[in-house]
Structure formats: C-alpha cells, structure tokens
Image 1: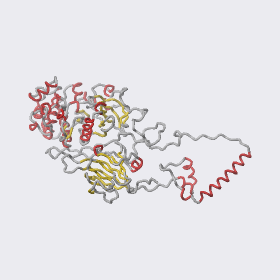
Image 2 (image 1 turned 45 degrees about the vertical axis):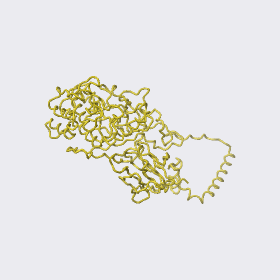
Image 3 (image 1 turned 90 degrees about the vertical axis):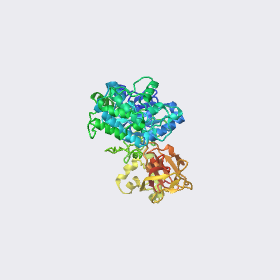
Image 4 (image 1 turned 45 degrees about the horizontal axis):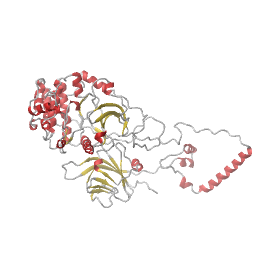
Length: 595
C-alpha cells in the first residue's frame, strides 16, 4: 500500500475530498483529504500540531479483524521505525492495537516514479543515475537496520525536489523474521520480483532488493519493465529462466542494470558498488544533486502536490475514546504545543556489521521526530460557567423601604463582626490557599491590588516543584529491576519481591511495590510530572510488545516517587540477552498524598 501517489493530474485529482465512509479524524489527527487507496486500506492527508503534513494509512476492517495480520503489522511498524535516512519517508506514529490499525509517515510532495513515467515517459540518463544512487543510499540504511524491503517497485519510489524517497514497508520484514512464503503467500509485485522470490522457497536477502533496483532503473530509463508485461505467470517465468530485454536501455546505464539483474544473488553488486557504478557512468567522482535534477514536466507535478489543502475545520466531534482533560468551552483557535514540548527522536541504529561497505554517507541520518497522534488538550482554565469575555450581570436597582435597609445594614455588620472573630485565629492557615488546579476567582484577583495582606491572600503561594533526575540510555535486562529512590538508578538483579519497576521475563514491565502503578501514555501525549500526576489509567504491568520507540510510561511507586520511562529501543534478535533501552526521569517524593 503506497498511498502517497494516487495518480497524476491536478490538485483535485491528487487531494480527493473525504466521502461519506471516510473518517474525519484518526486518533486525533484531523483529515484534510484522501490521497489514495490500495489493497490494504486508504491513505489520508493530515497535519501535525506544528503544521507538518503527514500521510496516514488506515487499514481495511477485514485486515484489522485478523489476529495474524495484526501481528505482522506490528512487526512492520517496529521494523519501519528502525529505518531513518535522507531518502526514506520516516514513520512518525502508529497504532497497531486500535480498532482500525493505522500508520503515519512523513508526507512527500512528489509523484511516484510509476506516475511520472506513465504521464511523461522515460527519464533522462542523468536523472536515472541520481535516482538509482538515492535509492541505493536508502537501501544502505534499510539493510543496515537488518531489513529487506522485498517490494521495491516504481510505485514505492517518490520523486521529491531534493531526491527520491523509498517508501511503503507494508511487506518489509526483518531479515531474520519468518517469511510469509512458508504459508503460501507470495511477497512482492511480479514484474519487479527477483528470481529467488519468483521461484518460491528461495532465501530473501539484501541482494533481492538489488535485483529489484536494477528492474526499477530499466523501467525509469525505458518506460517498460525489463522482463516485459503480461500475465503474472508469464512474467515470473521469464524472470527465472530468461534474460531481460535491455536493448532500449541507454549505453551508460547498461553495465549497472546488467550486473544488478544477475540471476545469482552472489553475482549482484553491493550497494556501495551500485553507487560507484552511478559515479562512473556520470563521469563524476562525486554525484551532485542539483535542484533541477528532474525534468520540468515532472517538477511541475511536485508543485501541485506541495499546495496541499489546509486541515479541515474543527467542527467535528473528537474520535471515540478521546477525552480532553479540560471541560468543553466555546471553539477557540488551536493552541501551540506547550513550552518545553520536544518530540522524542528515536536513535537510528548503525549499519549491519555483516555488511562490509566502503560507502559511507557524508551526512548524518536525520532523527525521526515523533509528532503527537492526538491534539494537545485545551490548556485554558474554564471560565467559571460564563463564555469568554462575558461580564457578570449588573443587579437591578432596588428601592426598598428605609426600615428594611437599616435592618439589613445592622444584620450585615453583626454577621461580619461574628465571622471576623471566628476566623481571626485561623487566618494564617487559610491565607494563600488555592484549588489543586491553581485557580482563583476573579474577585480575589482584583482585591489584591490594594496591597498588604489582601494581596498575599489573593495569590496562592506556589510550592517548589521537585527537581527531576535524568538517567539516559539505561539498558534494563529482563529479570532485573530499578529502584527510583537510588542516587544512581541502575538495573539490579531480580524481578519479584516488591520492586518499584521490573522487567519481568514474561515480557512486561511490572510495578510491584505496595501502592505502585503504571500508566501507558498515549502516542504523542507529552510526558511530564503533571501528566503522570493527572492520568489515572492505572495498571500493574505493561507488556513490552505494546511499546515502540518513543512510547512513554509513568511509574508511581509506593514510596512516593514518580518516574517517566521513555522507550529508546530494544535488543537485537541475535543479542545474547533480552533488554530494552530507556531514558528515565525521576521526581523523588513527588507523588501527591491521597489524604
């Protein structure tokens, strides 16, 4: 399911309006348009709170009802979050457990290679060389994370102004994962499969993607697949038993394509060799990607896609299950994220040691900024039951008898004196008190302008907030625990025995101390001391398979400490130990008393 390339044409064709069966929001993301649909579901345009466009892929209900699919989809998300590179579209948010699973990636304003070739024909040789070099760099990052794409094809390559983007890891699995071919499922698109895929039963390796890269290069340069078109069985037979038709491939590209399309995976070039072949064919020691690397007609399609429609107006109810922490109020403009908000950036894994690549990018792979999947709850306090800006009603003028007025004055003076005598001794205890939300009445706020003790009573005295203690990169091994009150929080052996936070070998985080609990924050929900204090979705354990890079868990211990766990990664499949890497923020003695 590609989704970001619904077809060529004007903006009305690219950004299709939502229809009756389309949702208006997905986990708090307001949908602006429909980008396309595929066999797995539909793809929509939305925006992060900061205004960056994202593509949200919503899985079809019949797939969501299949437990086996959900397992594979969760594995897909975990694999895709390990891929961070300049020529890939990063995964920034997802929900694999919801009623309708979904995945959010960065929106790329550009047509797919398939759409560009269909609309404008074959690409110039210089463009193809830069295209292949960018795709090879993307594969370098993908393979370095231990992943084989398995479905590299023209519709999964987007053409952006600054280079290509390899997208859609819908059927990409870690190299050591169980292949779906064991259950009789064919992985990949027939015209762009490798022989080991087409024959079935072959071992899928990074060389499989190199074969597909050669096919994509031939398609971009000629406008047609290297092994022709026709029925799937006919194409697959030619891929396994016949040689590709490279007669129309330009001479400068023929060596690159021929080597990539070798039947024997061991004879195919490495990613580093592919880039070197591109350099040689371009007669350049260093490839330079100019702003006009694409033909003008293709670049014009980018301009259309850049003019994405604005987010839908906030006139629709929030999605089921979304509950703001503040009471509803008349519509107000969306507030920016609060001060101090910083999206977590997953640590991009290093190259696979098994790959001996002479190629080393001259840039650092950008972090995948994780944007919230739900808008931040309103930060304004309620207006005391009155609309914003409304003035209290002016009481009507009364014309009662003089006797009644005198009696009222006497009663008021007497009552005031009595109240003063009763409260005089208690003044130090009540002075400066405020609600747990820090709110004060408008009258109290105005009364403090006269100076003296009145001002102290109107302004609540702020208690000093506990200082956070930061512990970065803690590797918590299964069977070990953490004690938040320690000066240096380090894993200690043991998973049972009243510990404050343990990684149980059963595959879950456990809060065992008396009165301790955990809260799994929603994707994108900013973690803070206030959030951990306010959220009451308590549980005793959180299974690790529900966690992904960037997810946060609040820990409240029975000893009064509060911790915020931010997941940064997990041990590799071939690691001799099972552990999770986390950042931990601890506020000691910060738990509010229940008295």
